[in-house]
Length: 178
Image (tube, rainbow, N blue to C red):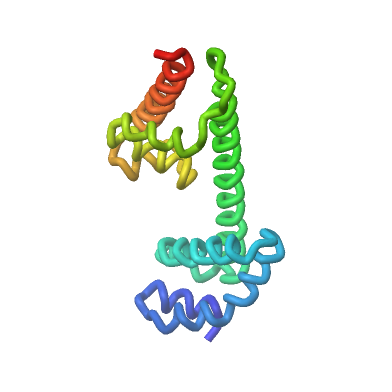
């Protein structure tokens, strides 16, 4: 069977068709991802996401579209999303770590440890902690955070901003000796 016929069969519920597609293309897709990402663990993460997306979009597949370019488009877009999330996550972490380390308030001669910063999270509400975790640990957008928390993306942004502001206020008050 051709890739296109296998994809149509998979779309119609034939799981063995999926297994055949997976076996047929896993080496080529992993090779592409490892070459581009230069990291086997990251490539495996993206590879998993590709097949999750393939599964989710199987009903959108049109048999007149060649399968290989279609799956490589999914692979490329998934890899780009992964790189963007990683870059955004690192940017936020470095900014927050810099803020925490420098304690840019008062006459602090000793930087605050990351462990001490994490202990301050207990002063936040559950939604604030969850929003921060989704934003900075998982690298999710506010739209995705809203979906996870079953709130609007505007509320997700507001909760995250308030949590960050609260942490900064806590650090500032400790720095001023209050």
